Amino acid sequence: MEPLTQSEYTQSKYFEKKRPVSWNGFDVFLLFFLWLMLLGGGVRIMLQVFSEQTNSDNISITAKTTTDHPLSQLLEQGKESPIILFVAFFCGVFTAPLTEEFLFRLLFQGWLEKKSNDWKSNNTYSEYFPLRFLFLPGFFSIFVVSFLFALAHGGKRIEQPVDIQFYSMVGVGIVNLFLFCFGMFYLRVIRGVAVQELVFRTNRIIFDLCLAAGTFLVSAPFILYLHWLLRNNFPNSITDPVPLFIFSIILGMLYYRTGRLFPCIMLHAFLNGFSFAVLIFLS
Image (tube, rainbow, N blue to C red):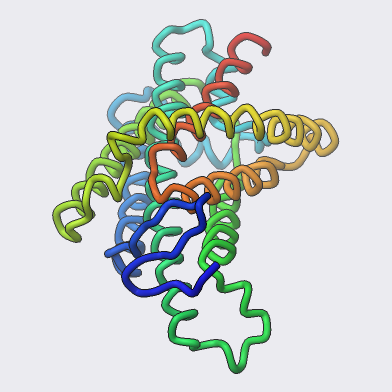
């Protein structure tokens, strides 16, 4: 691959041309910080307003820890309820792929690609850092984002009453949808990013959808088998970060391949949707 320039990435025939992103590290920090603050506040508001068990702090302290994902817990207790199924689908298959791919792939990975490209162009590390390949735009950005993506899915989990889980999930879904819409508005209006550089290009929608579907068919069996294998061999540990790290690498390569968010969102939604169906029909 030829050296990258400031105006445009030089790609092979397998990688589409794309320009360095126009947002900076402050924008990345701002939107991630806003997301985390809204998540905490949104869940707390939903519990205080709607849940009968308002003392959620005491519940959290006395509840047992678990290795099950919150969505799995919710579906296990209430999959017979249509409203619970809708909320679980809304959060896990719709809003989670939108927001997580926007934050981790478009915003964070896009910025890291630009920074590593700048470092390479300016030779800022060539004389004193022997492992220069680590800062190639694709390798460095995909690895760092995937590590943090996996880490974000490995936090402490506790068993909660079904109403706590339900209203918490509603709050998460609303915050995710708001953050995605606000983030798109922020990049489009404040940073002047073109629509085709954010999510999709109208003349590539079918191609991106087929690319996401094909990637799902190739990668999903391995990801799901690895998840099942780890869960069965380490039942008392949270093993989700391991397959999610590999899945995030695949998502990162897909974004680096196209420079568009749409195929990443669809691939993420395909995997979450398949997992959702398994939990409904096979558990």
